[in-house]
Structure formats: structure tokens, C-alpha cells
Amino acid sequence: ATIVGPPVNGEVSESNSLIQSLICGDYPLYPQFGVGIIDVRDCAKAHLLALESDAAAGRYICSNVSLWVGEIVRIISQYYPDAGAPTRQLWNWVMSVAPLFDRRISTHFVKMNIGFIPYYNTNRVRDLGLEPRAITETVRDTCLSLAAMGVVPVKSSWMKREVATLADDNGAKA
Image (cartoon, rainbow, N blue to C red; front, side):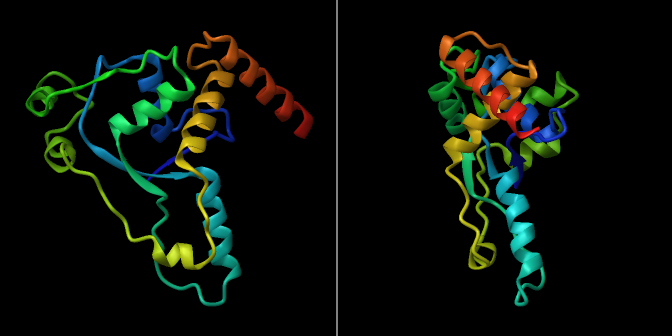
């Protein structure tokens, strides 16, 4: 699963870079592939629950939900309407030739991911007591954190207020 959420070290993780790229409009269209997502705060909580449980053993899959990239775009647009997020899906056949033009995309990635959405059995980690936050909260908080870091543009008055509130909250915690 992809771990996203507010960064604690002030750097944009590889996983958060997907959301950053979507906000900034780095891609005019979005591909049809799915990702399993977990909030970094929920992943940390799952680790703590596993450490505290005498019954915990073996591997646990930490994923909240699997979403198509288009669904992530819609959540971003809901909370960040002035983002440069793409509004239309890229045709799969175009994505299949993308590795010829973009070194960041491998043929293997395209074959394994385009038109596919992963589903994970998360019963074991939920049995430990993990109740993941809503994915809309995760995406919203990621957008706000990226804006507060200055790595995505802040255009709307709503976003400016939210980023200022986030900065005030972080200053109060320090």
C-alpha cells in the first residue's frame, strides 16, 4: 500500500509526490490504475497496536482503501478546487507507449498496473483495533501539509486560511 499523509520531516515522500504531481497539474490526464492507501498516522498506530498486542504475530497488511487515481483526483478537487489536477482520464493505449517517452515509467509498471486496482485483506490489522481515518481526511491533510511546506501553490482564500491554521497549530505544539 502507498503511505500518504502529513510529512513529519518536512520532505515530500515518494508516495506524497503522487498527490503533489496531481495538485500541481504535472500531468494533463490521469492514468487508470489503482493504489492501496493508508494514512501515515494510521500506519504508525498499527505498528503500536502490533507492539502492544500479545497475540500479534506474522505479517500485517496496512491499507485503508484501494482507489483509482481518478478517485484521488476527485477528492483533491473537492478540497482543493483551484488545484491544477487533471480532469480527464488518459486512454490505456496511450499509457502503454508512455515508457518509450518517459524514463520514469517502466513497461513492467504499465503491464502490472494499468486497468488494475489492488485489494488487500486487512482483517488482521483491523482485528488489532485499527480504525483508519476517512480517506478524504488523509488526502485533505496531505494537500494542506504540502501547501504549508510551499511545494504546491496556495490560491484560494479557503486554502490560505487552512494553511495558516495548520501553521498556528504546529507552532503551538512546538
